Every structure is written in C-alpha cells, then in structure tokens.
Image (cartoon, rainbow, N blue to C red):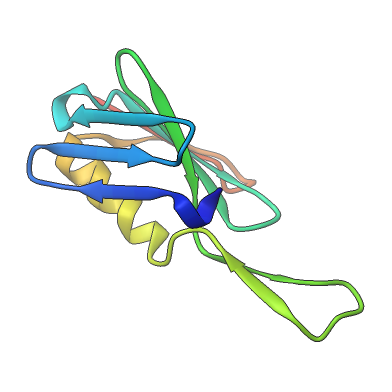
Length: 106
C-alpha cells in the first residue's frame, strides 16, 4: 500500500491518495496532526473537517534471519510534518515522554 501512496503539498493545501482513500484539504482545513512512534518509523495522522489520512515516516525493516532489508514510509517524513504544521498554522500542543506529539491551532 505504501508504494502506491501519493502525498502532495501545494500552496493551496495537501493531497493524499493510497488507492483506498483519497483526501484533499486546504491548509486552513487541516485541524490537527498527531505523530505516534511505532515499530517502523513514526505514524502521522492528519485530520481535516470531513476526513483524515495517515502515513509513515521512513524506516528500514530488517527481516529476521535474513540479510535483506526493506524501506517503508516517506523519506524526509519529519520535514513533511514540519512543513504541514507551518503551512496550516498548527503548533505543538502536547509532547509525551514516549515520543507522541500532537499539533493543533492555538
């Protein structure tokens, strides 16, 4: 699924599509962003007024007992979150000790 995911940031807003879900929102419609640590990168949830979507930041997965690895998620994921927060006017509302971050309007 990640392989077919499109995430596009424009001057007008954000567009997300993964084959099952298609969401677009203007920057003023982005209401909150939550970043959760996970086993494979961070999971980023983005909420708008009528829909939401999620994506992963880049992580490398090592197969147990194998010499191969795979990469999942978006490269520069932290930069993507930073750009989305800046464009939508969201600020860090809460951060926890386990790495969870929540961004919202002031």
